[in-house]
Image 1 (tube, rainbow, N blue to C red):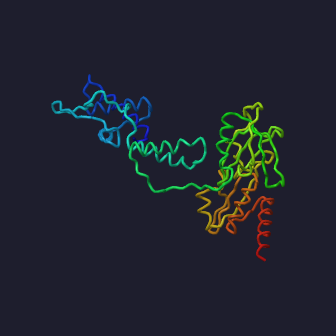
Image 2: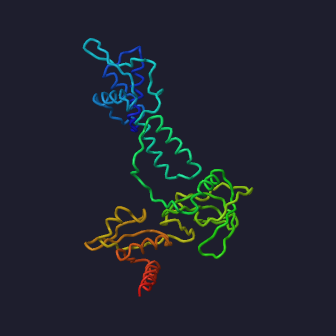
Image 3: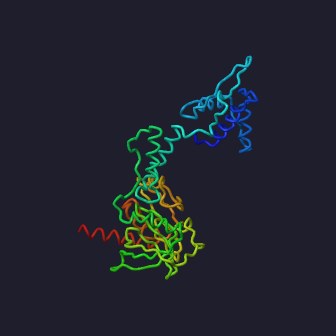
Length: 335
C-alpha cells in the first residue's frame, strides 16, 4: 500500500462508498467523498482531480493493492462503482505482497541488531513473511558500519532491559587508564553508539556524577536490590549538544573553534558537517574557514588530526597546541 497519508485517507473514503448498497457513486461523487475526507483531516487541502480517483481504483483492484472486487455498472450514459461483494472491505484484508515486501525491508534493516535478545523476533517474522508471501530472498544491498567482533555487544540486551526496568547495577569495569578493574554502582540511563562502539551512560550512585562506560571494557554486570531513582535531571537529547562523540565534561563550557579547510576537503566537510554549530566565516579560492562552538574533547581532536594537512586549527590556542603535539609525536615515529 502507498505509505502516503493522503492516499490512505482516499482509500478509506472510496472503501466506504463501494460498500454502500443504498447509493450509486458516480465518479464525481467519489471525487467529492475523497475531498470531504481530506478536508476533515487538513483544512488547507486543495483536493484531488478525476485522474487521481481512477488511479486509486486501479491500485485498489490490483493484487499489489487490495485485490478489491470493484465493478463499474452502466446507468444510462453514466457509470457508478461498487464492490461486487458488499461484504468486502480493505480493512479486513491481510497484508498484500507490496506491504509484506516493505515490512520485510524494514525488518532487514532491524536485523543489524542480530544477537540482541530484544530483537530475536526479527528473524522469526522475516521467515514467516517469506513463507506466507513466497518473498524471494534478495542479495545483500545495504550494510551498516558495524564491528561484528566488538566485545561487549552481547551486553546491549542486558543493559537495555536494566534501563527499561529501572534496575540498579553493580558493574566491574576495566578502564584504559587503570591497571586494575574498578567496581561501581550505576543507575543506567542511556545507550549510545559512536564510531562503531557502544557506550553506557548512567549515574554513579557513590560519586553522584554521570559515568560513561564503553561496553567492551565492562567485565561483569550484577543486578542489585537498591532503590532506583527516576532520571529527572539529565536530558540526553541535550547532553551531547556541545560535543563531537561521547566524551562530555559538564563543567567545561563550549568554546569558539576556527578551522581553515583546504578547498579539496571542503566539499566533504560541507556535505557532512563536523557539528550542527558549523558556520562558514571566510571563503576564498584556496580555503574555507569555519567556526564551531564545542567542548574540546578526545573525539574532536582525533577527528581534526585525521584530516591531516587539509585542516589547520586557527583557534583556540589550546586545540592548536594539542594538534601540533600529536603531529610532532607522529613525526618522531618516522625519523
